[in-house]
Length: 146
Length: 313
Ligand code: SF4
Image (tube, each protein chain N blue to C red):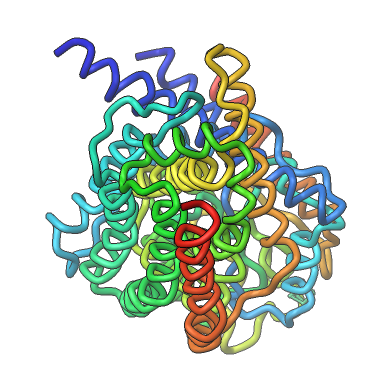
């Protein structure tokens, strides 16, 4: 059993498929996430692939503060992902609410709605920072498995 | 009994084919990356993807038909593996052969597409239903040219058996040059069958999420992906056996090497098409297949009939 678990864990670390979801960002963070997916940065080197459906994804990459309207949708998408799943909050808004904090229609960061595994601050977070964040998340998962 | 089990499970059955399929996926993705001036995935990437999916939770939508949803991937996998048994690899003889196995192989290769349809249809999700209908629509566009282009060499060889066709072309070394048109048609049809760019309309992730596979997750998705990988190998081997029947050595090692070169040449051509073209619309694809590809396939039949009636009599 031990060996099988090890193999599966290795596979998980080597092939994180991501799903990108905008929870109310000003769109700059989304553009940076898209930029991180372009051939220039080539994140397929780490096995990262952008998937379009929550069923295929392992990592939910959220950008922007959680608005009251998107909260239920965000939770539904999170629930649609099969276990084990991880969440990354990209941008200052996603980590804390950022400039939108205190707005009547904003709940705050992503962690107000769903559990978050990694925070990547920046307004907007640069592609390098996003890739670094994903790699650090994988690293921390690897360490926690030991 | 033991020999049959060995054939089905290990060689040239499931194990051998999965390894070859994973290698083919890697070659395809790496070539694609290199052609885009990227580094591309590491060599273990397809294996890691497969194992990860095996270890993931399986979600079956509440509205989906449990039985069809679960059975479709298994059928896809089984059909492709069985088709491989009838295709001659490096000799002129397949493991099993009888008169008419060409037709059986073609029909077996059709089953994965049907399972994509059924799996998508019974997921009862909007995206997968659209994907399912698109894949069955596309089937009607590429299947006929594929059949006709593969039957043309069979006419010349005077047999419906893949092994006999290969043996005929091995005995007449330069005759494969007559079938080059058909080879082109078959390559285009194979692109459609494997739902590759420019014919990845059923999966079009920018429009309909992931087509038939939208609701699939975990183990079932892994089976589907493996079935597609194996389908690549089987399709490439089929084309190699019919259209590139040279270097069929008696020596298994050399013969195997040339077999690998041939199928990876075809896989490289598919990867090249993926890089160069963009996705067509479904109506453009069908128009293209019926207006241009099918007539060329018929022309190939005509050429072979004339050759058979005149020069080669
Ligand atoms: S962090 Fe800055 S760039 Fe990103 S969504 Fe918020 S305001 Fe926009």
